[in-house]
Length: 339
Image (tube, one colour):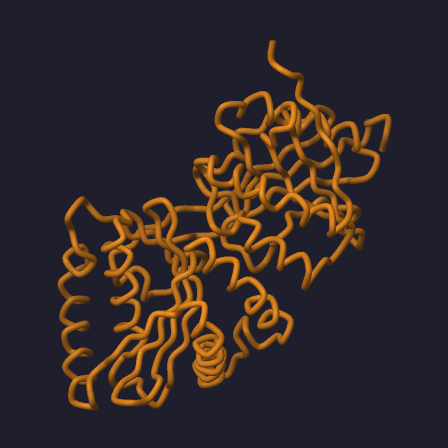
């Protein structure tokens, strides 16, 4: 006889961190998981931001963790909202469900949130990709549900054996050839891949180049916040240890001209952050480094390259097409006896 499912609420950072090993086991087993649901990403996020009261729900069958929903309670002008740990800086968010127990563990999660409904007014599942487990959860009773598109996430797909360059439009291939010729005339390009030993130095370049790029446009960029930089530095060792992170620094001649921060997992690659030196705009170092990152992903058997949130034109120039993240929310009905 199968052991019954048991749920629990984790409300402190130490108890959440204590889950790390079994969290990794569940994450590796969950088909919808991305690097943004890994403990290497979300534990540092909580350490650096912790913007409300932690409300993470676990589901176990016996000793085995079969479900995890890391949320927190924001108590503000919009009421008491359950929001996902990792919000804002994570391009994909989701719950984790063991595929062998997906339906029943999903129901157990919902039942637990319903039992605790006196603590919240709205439960929001944000930035759910098309394969997200959060889209399969049953709607809790006594709630008004909303489901709506949230963010465009362009994705480039490859057939087996197809290169990134071959998959892109001809006009883009011409631009890439032109950029390579211009860079060659200025000393050529060399790309360094980050390791545990060199990651800190490449992050320094990334932060500087990202800032320079955005300041040239009169904006700050996401890395202007010191807390975001501290979070990234904290997350990098765990991401490298799990072989998820891809850090690249491109030099033109002997000068750092562009930096890239992304992930590779389960035949999918994710381009998260870039920065480049505006003084090298003529050589298009951003284009050259994106080309390198995409080709490296293909060499690692990736069949999808996710440019992540935002409809920037350069993503479509590669031939990427939109996939939409969804927001799913549940607001307690006015007539709920616990309201």
